[in-house]
Image (cartoon, rainbow, N blue to C red; front, top):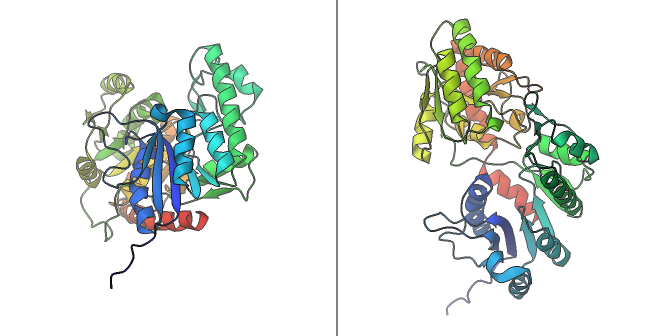
Length: 398
C-alpha cells in the first residue's frame, strides 16, 4: 500500500525588491530558500522587479510559487497571495510601502532590516562633508537641516523632503512588526535608538557564501598582499586605504601590494592616488567566487576600509573562512566579526582616518607570530556565522 503524499509544510511568503541576485540581500535569500525547504517549510516569493535575461534568480531551480508585483498590481498581488494562503510573511524591504502595509495588516509578519530603513534620509548613514564620518543622529527634522550642507545624499531639497517622509513611514511600519530581525549588534542598537522595543528587535547570526575550511589555516610565507573586495564607491574608503599604505610600508620595512577585486565610480580616484603616492595597486576587476577565494588564500590581510557604518560586512566572514584576517575601521557591524587582536585589527571609525588604518595594518603584520594567530582566529570566527545557526534562529521565530 503506497503512502499518501506528504502534506505541504507551513507556507512562508518571502517579499523582496528584486527577483534577480543583484546584491547581498538576494544572495542571502537565494541560499536561505532551499534551507527553509529542507526544514519543512513551503516558501513562496513576491518581488517588485523581475530578473533580466541571463540574470540568476533567487528562486532558480526551486519550483516555488512566485508573484511579480509590477505585473499584477497591488490588488492583483493581494488577491493571488490570499488564494495561496501564507501562514507568515517574511519581509525584506520593498519600495511600495502601501503593499508592505497591506501585507502587514493581513498576515503575521517578520521584517529583516538589512540596511538603514527608516533611520536615514539617504540610507547611507554618514556625512560626506567636510570629511566622511558615520552619523549617529536619530531620524528627525534636524536631518533635513544637515542633509545638503553635510552632503548626506543628493543635492535636491525636494528629493530630500520626499525621501525624509518615505523613511518616516518606513520607521512607523517597522514599529508595527511583532518581530524585527537584524544582523549585527550595531543595527540592533540603531533601531532601539529609533524607538523599537528591546523585545521586538532580534539579532540573528548571518552566514557567508560557502562553508569555512574544515581545518585551521596552515603556515605559509607572507605574500605582501592586501586584498579589498567589493564595489568601489566613496562609502567603501578605497582612497583612505591607498593613503594608509605608504606609512605602513615604511613602518614594516617591506613592500605591500594592494589587490582590488571589484570596480566602481571610485576607481579613478584610487588610481590617481596610487600613482601620486607610488603605491602598487592591481585592479583585478569583478571576479567570480572561485577567483575571489583564490585571491583571499594568497593575501595576508583583507582590507575593509568602509567609512560608513556597514550593517554587517559579510566579506569579512567569507575571508575568515579561509584563514584571512581583516583590518577595518570600527564602524557599524564590523566589530561583530573583526575582534582586535583575535580575528583582525580595527582602526578608530569616528572619524575614519588613514593614519588609524596604517596603525592597524602594522599591528596585524608587524609580528609573524601575531599574524599567524590572527589567521587562526579569523578561521574560528567564521565557524560562528554559519547557515545552520541562522536557520535555527529563524525557524524558532517562524
